[in-house]
Structures are given as structure tokens and as C-alpha cells.
Length: 460
Image 1 (cartoon, helix red, strand yellow):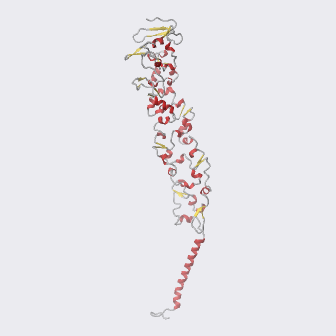
Image 2: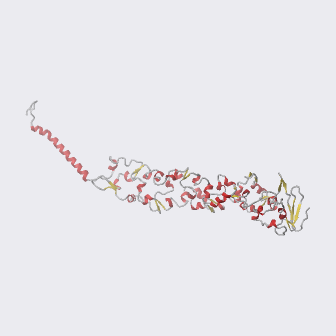
Image 3: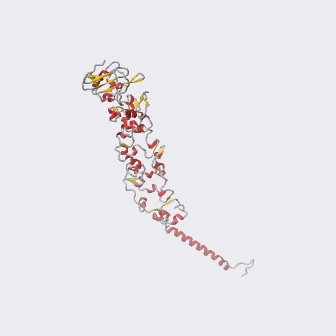
């Protein structure tokens, strides 16, 4: 056929040129049909293709990845319900699925709510997380999704809470202790505060709250006060239980100095345990002398002696001192009387007789000692049968008080007779001498007076 310009092409040649195009188009159509059929009728296998495909390409990239995800074995937990849909469901309930690999953690008597409800994924991401154990939040941030964050909002925060460690004290799954605690009672506290456990061991006197639980006085999370106490002062805290002492102290006019310090009750009491009753820091009298080992001015301006030195220098001690019982005469918290005395005790030298003036002394001594003018049994301080106590006290207006002749703590003389008596601004020596049947005194510039119990002495 002539193929020169202007001449027609042969029809067969045209057919041969387009035939391959028709074949290729047909093959492409067949292939497209086959692909559509495959997508419709063949299931998608869960596996590495899930995390490497465009659908789940971020899966397995976090710091902590669940084992099946890390191994690319999605089918360990998931299955395709319908072959024509790209939807994969857990092969069984979440709780049952987790326990296929993990030990059951709900066997304690107290079970955390998400565990009880089988909601492991309430706290754990089943695939991956930036947090250890694939937790959905770091430390307390996770716990505070359910629990009130206010518990950590105090000025002083308990160490585990401050260190993002709720699980230091609480089991996240289950426990045999209340509040999901890791141990019962104080044992959870002792896991860190072992020094306190050692301190408490073998002590006879234990503060009630220590036996009941540390959290009776200390907040386990946070507080606005030191030592995680729930009150601004130790005294305020103590008064929440010791209401009798609160009422007693509220009524007194003279408070014990220790109560006015920032230590309050802790000036004398150990808040936890002690070898001594009332959880005193040491034996009662030794405790008193830790403060009363120096002179100082009392609130009324009078001088309080260095009691420790006084007792060391003077070996004739008053009965309560011998018994090492300061509280026999002093109320250790407060009183309506000077020097926190348990009863009225005149500080003056002279006073007319009134039983109320001898209130403190009469708690131990018989009041007939100053009421009976004659006696042979009531007292050794008599001249024959003349009661010299009666003679000294029953004068008006210059009756002598107990303080006129006796030091209530200690002296060098027997019967704790004082060494001196006041005379204006001076202290005059008493000059007391004791003998077998009586004795004598030579107070100040007066003449000597003698007495004898068997044979009455006639003084001028």
C-alpha cells in the first residue's frame, strides 16, 4: 500500500496498532476486579502490618510498649469480627484478657475499684505509654484523676506524696489492709520511719494514738503545719482529745511556764512513748529540775530559787521532795494560786489565823496541829504540853504563817526549819538548835527561846 503523503493507510495496519492497547486495558480491568474481590472476601491478618501501615504507624514508638505490641502480635489480644470490615475487637473481656498473662491482683480483702470492676485500662494503656507499666499518668497525676488533689495541697507535704509516690504506701490493686495500704497499722509508717519503731520498742507507757495509728495525729498526705500535724500548735492538737485538761487550763489564773513556750505540752511530755507515766520525758522531779536549775523572776516579780542547787546544798528535804513528787504541792498545768500551788499558801510572814491560809499544808498535815493549845502527842514542837505551833499561829494580827519558820523544799536544819527569817530588807538567822528533848532558837536580835517536851522550860 502506498504510504506516501496524501495516500490512505491500510485498515489492517490500523487494527494491529490499536489491538495491544485493547489487551492492556482489559488486563488492567481484570486486575482491578481481582483486587476488589480480595478486599471484599479475604480477612486482614493482625500483625506487624498494623504498626507499620499508614493506619497505626505511631504504635510501639513510646518509651514503654506492651509486650504483644512490641512483638507485632496484635492478634494476641485482637480479632476481626467481620471479614468485610477493618474492625478488631478484644478476643475476650479486658479483665480476662489481662489475666491470660498477668497474675490476678484482686485477691486482697480490699480491692481497688478499677480492679474490682475489671477496668485495668482505667489506669493502664493497653498498647504503650511514656510511663512505666504503661500507666496513663505519671505518679499522683494518675491517682488524682479520681482522688481529690486537695490532699496534697498543704504547706508541708509527706515525702512519698512529694516524690510522686502514692504506691509507696498504697497498693494500686488490692490489699489486706484498709485504704489499700501496703501493711497494717503503723507497719506501713515503720517501713520508712524505722527509727521510731526502734524508739517505741519495749517502752511501758505508750500514747493512745500511737497504738491506734500514727494518722491519729499526723496527716499521711499533707498539712499546713509542721510534722504534718492537723493543728497549728501541739497544744491545740492535744486538746482535741484531752478536753479535761483544756477546760482545766482555761480556768486557771497562773499557767505553768512550760505551757507558754512554743513547745507547749511537749515541754514535759513525749508525744509517742516513755518509760515514765503520762509519757513524761524523764522521771518527774528530774524533769522539773531541767528548767528549775537556775534563778529567775516569777510573773509576780518574786524570785524563784535555783531549786537544783538548793536541794544539793541542803540535805534535809521536805517529804514530797524525798518522794520526788513536786506535783504533791504544785499542779503541773496551772492553778488559781501563786506558783501553781494546789492550795492557798500565804507568801507573807505575818497573818492572823484563818484555816484557808493553811489550805495547802492541811492537805497532808492535820489541822489540829494549830487548833489545840495543849497536846502531848500532836507534835514534837512543844514545851511540856504547850503546843508551840498553836502559840505561833494563833496571834492577831501577827500570827506566823508556815513560811515564817519552814522552807518548803529543803534546809540544813531538821524538820526543814528555815535558816533565816525576813526582817525588812534583811534576812536574819533563826539560830535553830535541836537537842534530844527539844531545842532552841535565836531569831534575829531576840533573846533565845528554849523548849523541852518532858520538862517545860520557863523562858523570860
